[in-house]
Image 1 (cartoon, rainbow, N blue to C red):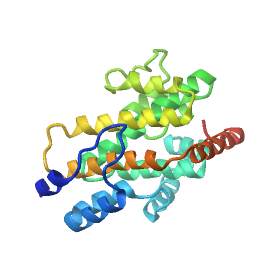
Image 2: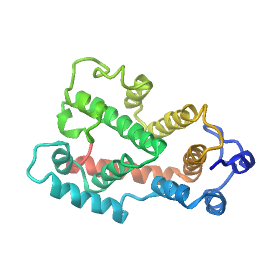
Image 3: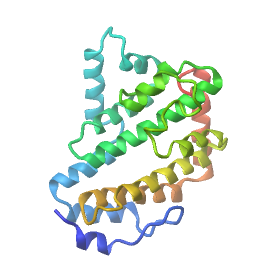
Image 4: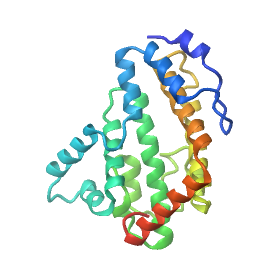
Length: 238
């Protein structure tokens, strides 16, 4: 189904600028316009990491990979419960029948894995146990090749920009730069796709980024930082 009228009526979104539309208004509009099947795709993007589907996937993986040497075993031993649920959410997104959904979750998993690998290398941690997932990028990172780019130059177009994020010490600024990379990826992904549900999903994700930064205060940023430090002291996460 095409969404010519819907997309033509939406205000333009610009990276780094204020969002011209609230998420409440956008979701209400999508709820009135999208088909049931397309609304389910939107729900996949909005699914929280503690959704029943995510918890069920964790239980299935625990049973499937019990006492096996595999990526899930390493994930189970290395990640906090919060990060474990997020990884399971990635796994769920990668099973979607929609190519855009699969690509979006894979893109985010790859970016986070590269950041994790760079941090591990700089601080002498075991890269193999910190990488999550089992796609091509994850398997290459587990090899911990000596190259600065981990031998991933043929796998990721924006690799240098992702690696450079580690040099940003301010965690809020780093997250903003990550969103800038995501924003640009979404624009490029749908560059030659018009009036489709993929355009709608990309618009939602970009609007969500702009709205999130509009409401994120310094106090909230400091809270996130304190939580990260607390986890690091416990040895839970990087």
